[in-house]
Length: 323
Length: 294
Image (cartoon, rainbow over all chains, first blue to last red; front, side):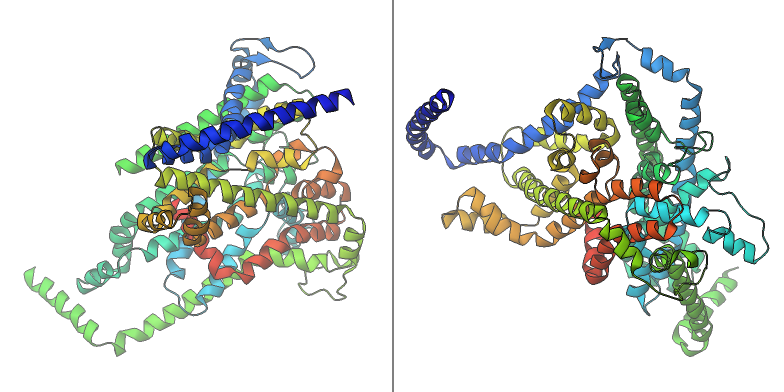
């Protein structure tokens, strides 16, 4: 009770002070020039966003770097260990398997999805009849959730008599494929739904790029008797370069960060069989939240992920800008 | 050599003038192209069709590859929804995705507007600082967010799931681009009419960038509706799961009851699919806009 009344009187006092300051502020506000007022408005508008970016983006980023040099399992005190987390990671055999897997997702996923989506976009661009319907068919998978589709594809991959693919193969007398049980096929099998779901977006972006190329270029080429194939290589692809660069970088980052599909298609043995599908993000998740709570080690892994993403994007931009 | 070149030019210009003869094989090729594209499109939606078809089947029919169930039933939906959890997760996802979308639209457009239309020292620095956060992968922030939420008691709350997504750097960039197309004269006119800066932003500038807001809304809503890793980490209480997290745990638990898993998958996918089919043209335009400007 006493506390409450005390706080009330305090808030009364604050109100009074506020009112006083307000009248003072008002007078001062009117003395400001238009430009000065603009500056005040700008910072007032930016106040909440700045707090957000500092607290939810910059501070955690710094925290992740700091944590990567510490050892902490949430229970004991944080302990500085220098580069130990990174050295442990370097000497960890599983990490190198995971590292290779992560790049396998990138190296298989990006070229296939780009070539297929360009092929479809190139031809769909020349089709008028039911154009919108066909485009919608290709785009629909993009609107799905990765988790739901991972479970659908997981069902597809089951052995006979459950799985759709193996049932289909059996009808033609083709032997069974243990999609998710084989150490060699599991990774592409997990990757397939990720490629599938992303195609729609890439097709739409490619078609917008194709639409932006002036028709006069093609008309001029046609008058010169240039073949379709030459037009594709000499006009379409060079003029499409900004679109291609964007899609390469964008989809590479996506494949390097693959997680939802792998996690949900291998819940019984995450990243299995024998770590053959485990990407770096899944390893991070397991290190931090898989029971042992090795926060420092997991933070070091996220720093490695950050460096990988940065280096891959920069290398891609450099290579493609030079061309 | 020169003669041959001449001949070639002549032949091609002739075919240009003579439209009837060479067009027939072209139509034929066009027909094949259309057929293959259409077939490819059908293959693309096959997983979705199978998902829906299986969700309408009894368990004994699941192993049958037919697309149209022999005995269609809504039993799976009734079973899954009567259980209560999916309904709960659906509401969680809806509330979280809606609130984050609203917050993102307001703050991203506000920041984009200020960075575009206000001249003040530090503007460029703030823009670069915000853009630089695009380079940092979510996975890197997830551990600090978790530690922060744990200390502040945000785990297993709506706020805890939502706070990392309340603003996006991508949205700021997109909105800034679009505000460039709003003429300063409009804003100046409103200023002379006595509107304050907040009113000018909300009543004048925002109305002029509606298409961009819609495009951003689609991306942000879809992103939050399907978000997985952070809600997975931020919740341990099943009552607070979002649809993807719930489906993931449900799938494990249902084990081999594939018709139930497909029903759960359908429940979490159908809303966005239906929205897409209704606003198709609009959404595709939005995606292109966001993709190309972003």
